[in-house]
Image 1 (cartoon, rainbow, N blue to C red):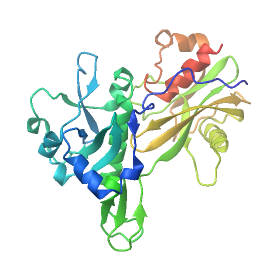
Image 2: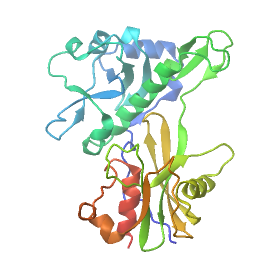
Image 3: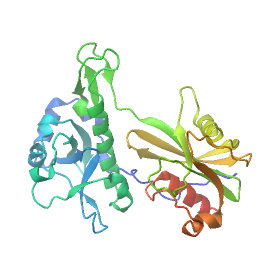
Length: 308
């Protein structure tokens, strides 16, 4: 099986930010940046992002000034320095403590939406920055206590780390590696349906988390065998995609099937089938749906189709 290159960038990649990690420990720089008229704040409210134009199919991110950010109770919620966007200091701020933050903002600022529903329509780079803010704020509000001794933690590195107030243990944002793979036998692709899918007819690539002491290729073979009983041979890297829903990095592969008889694990999948290229090109005619346009799963499938 030949390696199939990625035809284009995945959603949530291509960030325009200079993360400026060397500035995170500079308290004077951060203090000045927080009140700078050039500063931009990306609000996150209960894992949703502030956007306008969603209803018209032309979404765009809405960034706040430092004054507007204070209005949505920045002082009471987590915040973090994300980096420099075209030289302007950019922060994430979580305003989940407000029951409804919109009345606290100037009129016409848009509304909060699920980023995954519109990522494929956002201007280049915006989806990446919104995902960055969402993932970091998710980590901040769920890691307030030390995993070593259980004591309270307080932010460090301008919100990009946490330090235990008792044992001084340092804690950093967590990203869980997950493999996602399109298994093929040359003419057909293996897709599965999980009861967890929001779309009851969707079939997608297989995926799973990497376990300790396991290579990525080993994780691909193990997950496919566990979920479908299919043995896998050659494994080729395709591309990666940040997936902060809530805290993963998806590592995409194409994999060669060495067997064809499917035995599903009912704890993981409701169904799994082999699909021909014609079926995948016309899913509606065959009674199923493909994964979302913003997903690396969709990109793995499309690039396999185009490589015929």
